[in-house]
Amino acid sequence: MVTAHPGLPEFDYVKPASLAEASRFLAEHAGAARAFMGGTDIFVRLRDGAWQAQYLVDVKHLEGMQALSFDPAAGLTIGAAVNLNRINAAPSVREHYPVLAEAAGTVASYQLRTRATLAGNVCNASPAGDTLAACLVLAGQVSVHGLAGPRQVALKDFFRGPGKTALQPGDVVTALRFPLPPAGYAAKYLKLGRNTLGDLAIVGVAALGYREAAAAAGLRFRVGLASVAPTPLLLEPAALSAGPVDEAALTAAAEAVAAAAAPIDDVRGSAEYRRLMVRNLARQALTEVWRKIAA
Amino acid sequence: MSLHHITLTINGAVERATVPANLTLLQLLRETLALTGTKNGCAAGECGACTVLLALPGAERGEPVNSCMVLAVECDGAAVVTVEGLAHDHQLDPVQQALLEAGGVQCGFCTPGVLISARALLDRNPRPSEAEIREALVGNLCRCTGYLRIIAGIQAAAQLGAPAGPAA
Image (cartoon, rainbow over all chains, first blue to last red; front, side, top):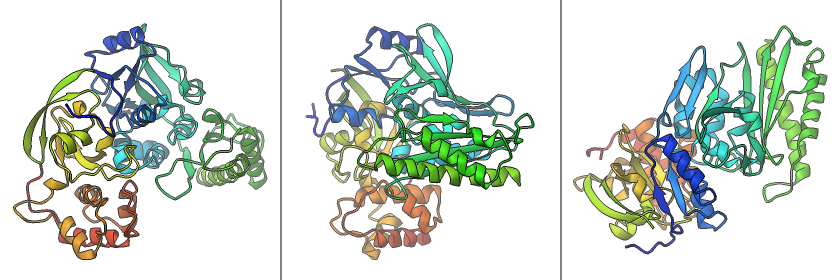
């Protein structure tokens, strides 16, 4: 037996044969068992003592977990165990959801992304989750398997606080689904880190816009924010749906987005700095999207 | 703690081991199999000193992972390539040769991980731009070289083409 150093604390490794078995085991051992995907969050937390687990339940091999599929009617389904490099490289994602490919590619490093998953990023519910702003503006849905069977939860209702989600004991996330985006839409993810690559976001802003005849301005916009509130946020700036979209409306929308943020001071930046950067990045992202869809 | 019997291929050789649930792939390599080329740096997936290529069952080719962040039990049926597996028949991999010639090695602690990341990059993108090389090395920290000679070495390796040996 090898002495674990710098090892992980002791736990049992459990590999259930089905989703039903996984849900049952997780519910019976609520508080002691954790489902895990790539482990990129959980191993760090176990090593530093922030989390304890008596059982780690590997669910990567279960049905549908490794599937990535695009259907021109139903949209995109990303199995919960699909890693971020696969999402970043998938032709269907790059063609129909380029903002998601972009956001997936900004997470940590290539070798981390070989293991890290979109579902893990969502379940970890870090306010700074790099992929979450893009997932929100793309109207993501979380497929969950629980004790009562499968169900869907809209991503906008999924986050309850830092590290807190709508998941109940026994729940396993099986996939993320994205409906077909609006025709002719454009989207942009802007991330501010302490350096260009590899760092967590100080501020992350995703903007998405599309033409809609029913809107007063003929256009609609969504903004997703990461790292600037206890949960990732999804906003629809009123200044851009009420009247004509111009430089003044974009500035007003960016101010409103900044006002909706509730950032904190931490090692990566002050609350005041974050709020200003939300305004600037939101204006930049919205302007870029607006130019594309108005052209 | 649960114990698990695993069989995996490491640098082309079949290995069998009985591993406790919490043993990492890095510990299996270094402490059980004495393959100490792979280094333990941060044990948090940040520094990349423990990077190896991992091909899980069914995968077309190995992809780089931080072996400190993978459980040995998860590697049952997998194929792993470490820095010891890059050279074949006393012939260095082109990326090893080029890094030596470029002076991209100083203390050497990051080098095994850098070599693995560079090999993986060249396998998926044989002619990377400088920006693509930098992006591929985000997860490999080097405190000696300032990276410039490492990047020059990988650019030179790209000119040399594919390695001679068998892919494990």
